[in-house]
Image 1 (cartoon, rainbow, N blue to C red):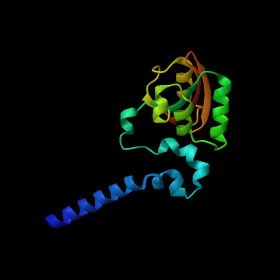
Image 2 (image 1 turned 180 degrees about the vertical axis):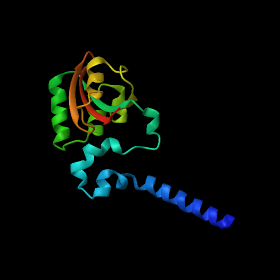
Image 3 (image 1 turned 60 degrees about the vertical axis):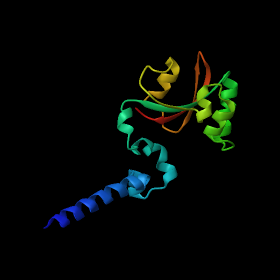
Image 4 (image 1 turned 30 degrees about the vertical axis):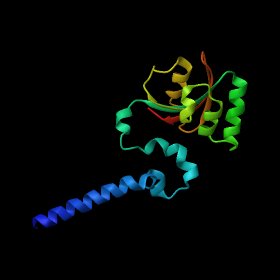
Length: 150
């Protein structure tokens, strides 16, 4: 066991770690079990952690589309669910919030940082990552897509 053997072992270990990060979803429970991605994507969405997700520990992440009334929010939600438009494009086209320019992405936020009903929806343990919800606040009606569970 010379110095070159130690370097080779370290190199192989580093390469293995790199491959795990590069593979992404292949190493989620769904990927390892070989289950269809459609059925398990929502269930394991929070299991796919990014390299810097530890910085957002205890925070939720969401995207939203803010409109003036509930009827309009329901129509937009229905169009997204029917596949007529994707969430980000709908946010750019319909949202009155500045986040619409970023496809509605609000990033991550801690408990209490958002207005009451919006905060309650995002931090509700029953809210599923990726599903759309409607919330009414003093700012208007929101079509919300939770992107990260706290």
